[in-house]
Length: 71
Image (cartoon, rainbow, N blue to C red; front, top):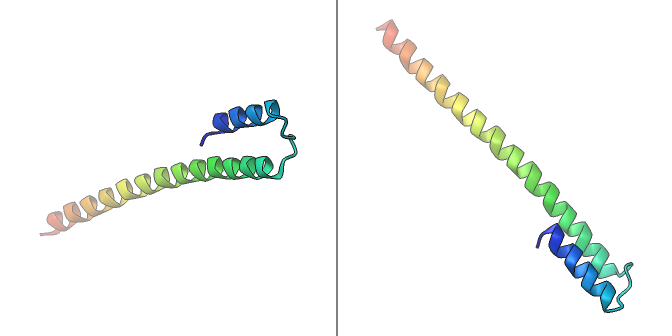
């Protein structure tokens, strides 16, 4: 469920006469906001891991090259 889905659900609830301060709607919004934050942090984490992986591969290649030069 996306934030837009929540907005649509909230609109439908309002049209049906369900109060905006409905605890279930409030909790749903809180969960969706947390989900969006988690996605953002996870994407940043993956980006960092990909950079780290590339650096490690480069360091290994450099070590192999240096070992070949010493022979």
